[in-house]
Amino acid sequence: MSKYIFNLPDIGEGIAEAEIVKWHIKVGDVVAEDDQLADVMTDKATVEMEAPVSGKIVAVAGEEGDIIAIGSMLVEIEVEGDVDTDKMEELEASGQDSGAPDQAGPDVVELDQAIDNKEVNSDNLKESAPQKDSEEPATPPPSTAPKTGSEKVLATPAVRQRARELGVDLTLVKAQGEHIRHSDLDAYLNYGSGQGYRPSGSSQKRDDEVIKVIGMRRKIAQNMAESKRNIPHFSYVDEIDMTELEDMRTDLNANRGERPKLTMLPLLIVAICKSLPEFPMLNAIYDDEAGIVTRHGAVHLGMATQTDQGLMVPVLRDAQDMNVWQLATEIGRLAAAARNGSAKPAELSGSTLTLTSLGPLGGIATTPVINRPEVAIIGPNKIVERPMIIDGEIQARKLMNLSISCDHRVVDGYNAASYVQALKHFLETPVLLFAD
Image (cartoon, rainbow, N blue to C red; front, side, top):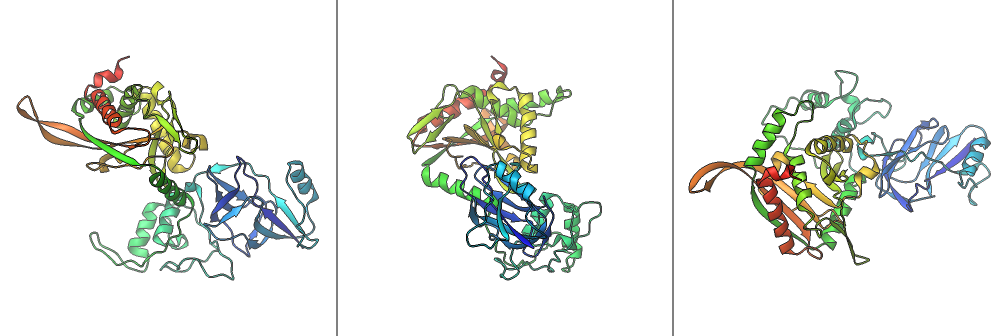
């Protein structure tokens, strides 16, 4: 018998450490070569770690949420026979250290496994039971039947995430088809969980939950805290009459042919891009350590998108060069990629200004948090039909409040108010959106 020590590989881009987001194995499990061991998250992406050899897991680096250094042990694997010298030579040729540590015996060899830099979003994380047999669980067990750990279930990442949040063991849920779906989970919660049917409108006391803040949710928490701690925010809100623009959108959709159906978002983005050239201080990023503001000529618009793993910001690159139909197509593609975990790192970084919208849940007004190191974020609120007095007569109009939050170190209140007035002019005179 030999033991392989699989160290956390150098993922690149100057990364010094990574967070263990999800274990797919536990001590005592037998794995085959290329089986998934864990998902680790850096500042750039989540990366799948795969087993370099087949064998039995005898030690793991820590629990989910722990931070480990590049080059330190991730897992220790007990294997049959001697070390695979061909694999060793291959790894050495790739520039990785395969020497044994001083404190280990002659049967222990370190392997820094070469990886394919396969980058995924947290939506692709799989269910696991990440704890050593000898340790107590880090959080109280859910109030459902204990997991067997031996059954494999097929379910989408969204269903797995929801089951985790509800404390439901998916091995107990009966699938009506090949995969467990949300409807199967609903049926289990209403009928099959041992708690009986819960009629609509009834309430039931739930047990307290202790949830460890890790992975994407930890990154969101860190980024938001840094933004509020370092940026002196101020917000400005104004009311915009969207009646004419909504009528134009209806006409465009009625004659769109094979093109995608337009929401208000592509039209709003065109207005944002057309009004920005006179206000370059808003389409900028601020390097506060270097004391440098970079005003961008191109509009790389971040779109705050809610996913099962939390808020993500895919980027519409060169939004100023797209028409409304191209924007509608790209918005749909990027939002879907963010939600299903297929978005590439380059599609989730490099924004110069962010737009955040809750659609019909938009409320009366918002004070959005700036996506650092940007200096502004725009938040349209919901459109509501209300009476207005126009030329002495009461008319029903479709009105929307629009919010903007700015970094007061870079943007003055006068700049923000003037920009929103310019944006308002485009939105209330929609023919200008299609003028050169």
